[in-house]
Image 1 (tube, rainbow, N blue to C red):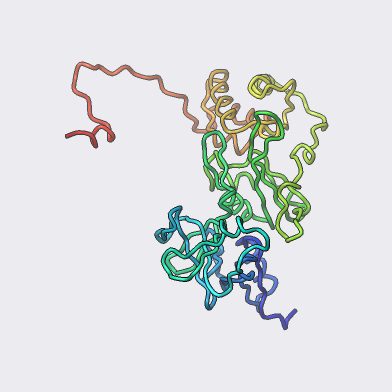
Image 2: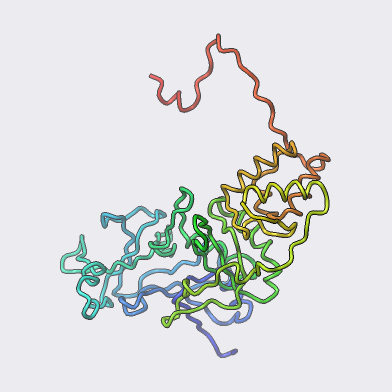
Length: 359
């Protein structure tokens, strides 16, 4: 492999962890990240990575000769640098259209709004321009989902998950395997030892994403199922229960705190039993139910357990340890202070919102 000088990757988003691994194994070979749909003859932009690569994402680079990349809004107008939009491709490499599919051709291949006799191809990818002129790929436009009132870009979640230590590849789905039970499920590949590190991966994600974007379940799979085109076949990813094994024996509570927590779990989740090592999210929980459970724990134990801790230690045994520590005062957890009634017979200061309205 010493004679190898260039390695090119394309087809899927390039994780930063993979770039670092490449230069550790092949320090003498330059890694290029390329981008391009089939409709643009496969290749229309390229980015040369370095050993010192950093940042949130590995860019897809700049357009090659005779090609142009545009990041546009819904009105086909350019968006400012750093603002996400939809990626359009123009130039000599564009295909004429789809054989025997005139409607799809009309939908995807558009007349260029600013250049006469030119065309644009609508990729369906989200992207943004960086200040250095490189383009960042942000995922698919159709990967935006809505969960409990929040709009979530699955590509954003996948990117954070793929950069977790030890993760080779990641995919995130919005699943509804049971009626009225939607949840985000993350899948990761890596060495078999990664199966024992899923809690650390969850902590990595929790520290970098809002709670509503954190997958309820993160699962290790040996490899990602692929389509004939080499893309991740998301519909073939397994149901979480097929991996976690619902039939596994559950360990009963061992003390009063665990017993009280188990009763709260059964009430909030609507399940007949709860083992001390069960994962709240794998049993069907989500962020809203977690908020309810934190509130119920406050009433029962008279302590304030941060919601963040719940995501980091989503088992009865983990939460029981937190409650015990809080009761003993080993952690600086605060009880909610009582609300003090303020006299209303004197002028009160305006809030910031009220100050904006003051004339």
